[in-house]
Image (cartoon, rainbow, N blue to C red; front, side, top):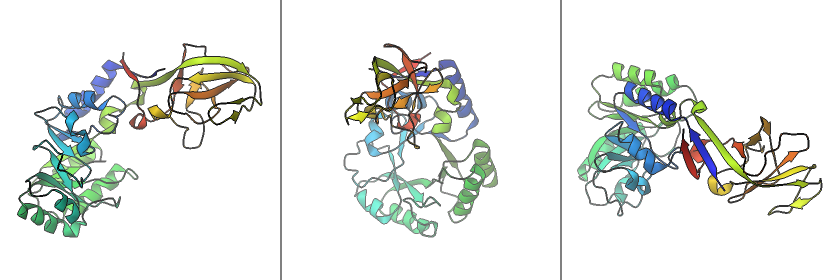
Length: 314
């Protein structure tokens, strides 16, 4: 049973180093499943690009190497267990501030963007910054996180408009803008220090560098109408029943439109039922290319939600 991610090592390193070399104030983001590459391994790779790494939650702090400043992107309501005094925590409200307790912390004040997620309205940002400082915390800047929807230029305009209400002494930590638009923001506001968080565009780039595949554990002929699987599913047409070595444990699921994420010979294999734990049942109808036991099928899933068993650097 294996879900394997193959990566073109030379192309990937060239891409990552090329992006990092273009960004002044880069903050690599290493969170969740480590963008399919493994969080701890990726945090070590990020340490060669910047003195700062952003993680998703306080529970991911242990993956960041010592000597690298970790930034926690999600506000925490329980920070008692945060062992790293160098961690920069996110504060987006009075409740987040209260959760910090009396221990002096390094913080970023989150400003609410058009995504309307957590964060203080920009009109209240100065007051929240003052409250953080009065409580003994060090404010490292303000954080703005535009939505994924829309164009980079729109996000840059939103960031610029929000920052007009924030004193230039506060560093701007931003994301979801292109490097060119980030450089334009910096050029238009030279009195302010800037940091750019990059995740997907840094670690993934050209998807041709990646190949996600799973092995075939078993294969046997099956007739239309046969009942198989965890949920007593009925096979719709005769063909070869295939047991694929990955499932919900790996984050493998049907595509958003319900279709199968599995391919072989450039043909989509039919899902018999939804992927379950470590195995998925699929069907190769008669007269369609059919893999044999020990061969691999291609898997069509976003890497940010997929947990491979093995990363194969080619």
